[in-house]
Length: 295
Image (cartoon, rainbow, N blue to C red; front, side, top):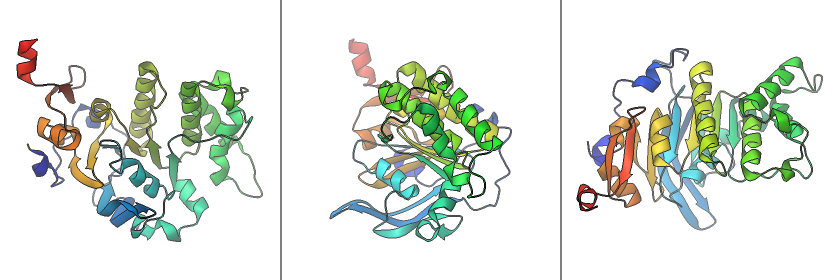
């Protein structure tokens, strides 16, 4: 299938990863919660995304990929209301995000942006605890449910032993895991992650992405992530969105849309796409067959 044919949005039968998700809610005939209509995004006089329509499938892991400066992180910022659209709108349950109180959004949508900055000298436990602020009330500042959520988030991201350490004394990889723990502690139905594997070694990258998949499978959370690594995206995504120059080139199941033609169109890279020997998902191998024969 060519890249142009993939934009029709058709989806094949679920593969092994999707079949393993036995606890997802029945979403048939229900509108998707997070959508965008005629979305235009800009920084001052530079338009990054123009007239984009988008639906985020509920109960799935959606991964956005594309070359640098293609608009993928800008799009994620708009989905989390960190960037006000120049035109169009992002809708949550059919309502423009601009019309929804910030606290109500924070109870439904969790966002981990690129390069977040922690308050000076704050400890790991205190930072993760801030993920519970949207759920607190003036008459109940902390509860057993808050404690459980923070403890669970820290255990899942392997930062419990760092609880009393100042965040600014941690390594880059440790800090990233702490920020992910804060996002998990927020316990939202929708989780937006902008390059969550940044600063992590390969082992922790796999751990984080396995965790994302586990949250989706066991708790039905809808996840949208921006990733640089196309092979990781193809392995972990239910729904893949490929962007270039502020537009969506293709969207759909990774096995349906990831082809050598698409990789060349989006990334300008010659490649061969083969089944991943572990998962069966598309695996992009740079180069062409004649180069392999020559070597």
